[in-house]
Length: 260
Image (cartoon, rainbow, N blue to C red):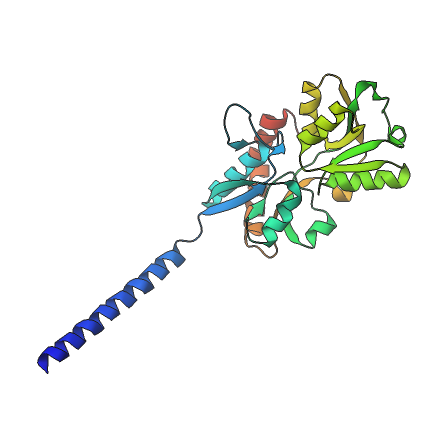
């Protein structure tokens, strides 16, 4: 009888200790809030985000530096996930990423699915083509094949142009694909953000470009977050600090060589 009592007491004590350990583990897990944020991007967009071929697999650029600076101030680390631009918004909706930094414009259509930070950079759009193409204005695009990145704001720009001048619109997942299609003669031109196009124009000496006028409501790049994410306000606060103390301008000069 005594032995049975002791055995029962020992079992109850063991179960109690295990339960306590489980509670402790859960508490530690809960108190150890998420310290790594997943940033989704499309690393084909220098100088915003890209991989320096032959040097490293690391994704570098203006957006990568901006993400790391903000996250560091908030006590987070950043893990960068590369994917096609057209899948970035869905990555937020499906929980694959905590935020998107990819030179993304906060259009009204996108705002229905995700939330955006304040604008952190403003650029313009360029029509890029070969110098001997004879394309120097929108009117010259009539009947031409124009390439755009799938899911980009430039895709919308091409559709606007098509209402004014009939063109054939083709899309590709990556910016280098657009450049290659022009070089091969399959595309007559492509619409690319000017900051990004600048790098390609420097490399491709037989390429030229002209700037499109922008819709003020669609201008600029912002950070995207899942709907109602608490990170939106936190990132906005740090973004304002970086604007006020000059840190954002330092990044602009580092990656674009000019002022905003």
